[in-house]
Amino acid sequence: MMSSAIKPPAPAERFTQILSVGIGGSALGPQFVAEALAPDNPPLKIRFIDNTDPAGIDHQIAQLGPELATTLVIVISKSGGTPETRNGLLEVQKAFREAGLEFAKQGVAITQENSLLDNTARIEGWLARFPMFDWVGGRTSEMSAVGLLPAALQGIDIKEMLAGAALMDEANRTTVVKNNPAALLALCWYWATDGIGSKDMVVLPYKDSLLLFSRYLQQLVMESLGKEFDLDGNRVNQGISVYGNKGSTDQHAYIQQLREGVHNFFVTFIEVLRDRPPGHDWELEPGVTCGDYLFGMLHGTRSALYANDRESISVTVQEVTPRSVGALVALYERAVGIYASLVNINAYHQPGVEAGKKAAGEVLALQKRVLAVLNEASCKEPVEPLTLEEVADRCHASEDIEMIFKIIAHMAANDRAIIAEGSCGSPRSIKVFLGECNVDELYA
Image (cartoon, rainbow, N blue to C red; front, side, top):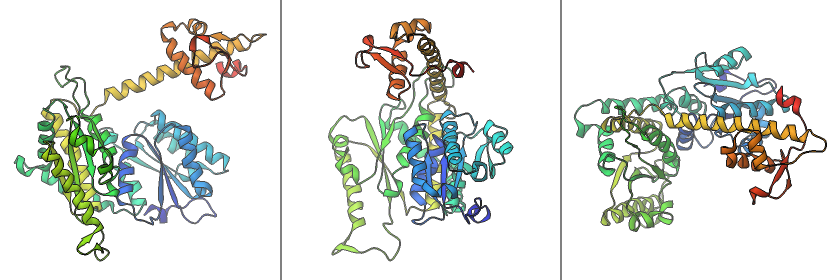
């Protein structure tokens, strides 16, 4: 779609790659859909920067090589202020500068109107900007521009995805519970976990293309349902833990514990009936195909668990198509909302995530104070190595001495601080200073 209408700077004739920069719901949904639905030879291949890990970012950029010049960069952040996404953007922009490329001619923003990211993209003249609505959280954004734009660029039929989601929504509007798929799923969760999250949800899709479904559901379910307080202000500590891999890989991993170990879970089997496109199947032995083995593994495992009083839910789809994936996304989004109503919590905020972001900001603020103290000591003649206690005292943060040790250990491992005496294996023994005196830059 866009790949034929929008071109990279000359002499390149077309974009060949997508680099998606986002985190959480801005990455997990698009990653799941790409793994599930992208054709073997898509018009644009996609890569993801979904963390603030420098080595991981370097790896993704290095994998692009000379194709950086023909890479469309999609930056996804509702506020534009999410640190991980901001860091990824700055790293990518640096790579563009070093390659002699103009980032704005290859950048696309998906963000809330008038956000920091939106204003930056508008002022710098990025290729395009797509809106996110303030009432749509990242974990429920796959059916917005967040998920649909990357999918369309990979040649995935997004109209079919939307059609599948619409069909599921229509089915979930009935007030007859036995005919409402999302209500039935939510009630199964409620029954299996006693309505208090007493058991974990193990998601086992028996299809390689659905491998990332459990990762996608981890955020959707756990960020939505993991709440300390209910709507009336009572402390309830609700939630359902989610993990999983794929079948039949798990026959050789944790099925042993699921059947015979601690009974702290229920299983969700995702069954896909069609093994291969019509006309491509063949028999490994008389009457048995490779897909028959997968089918046997699924139902054999299901029966073995049932025989040992292990509960399971089965969700069956005909085949993995844009329509069925759209329906699956809608099914689980609605089930989460209904379950939240059953246990009287708000599924659509995430105060715990905000608390984590605040705590991370406090660590970085402490690091700046540590740097200032070390910088001052390192500018003296002779250099004055400091103990941990001395650093903590000069930072007026004696209660944070463990965190100061962690900061110094991290800096030393990255050649930003020098351990003059002792080692990080014996914290009380170390004396530390900065390798260079840059007090003007620090306080600029």
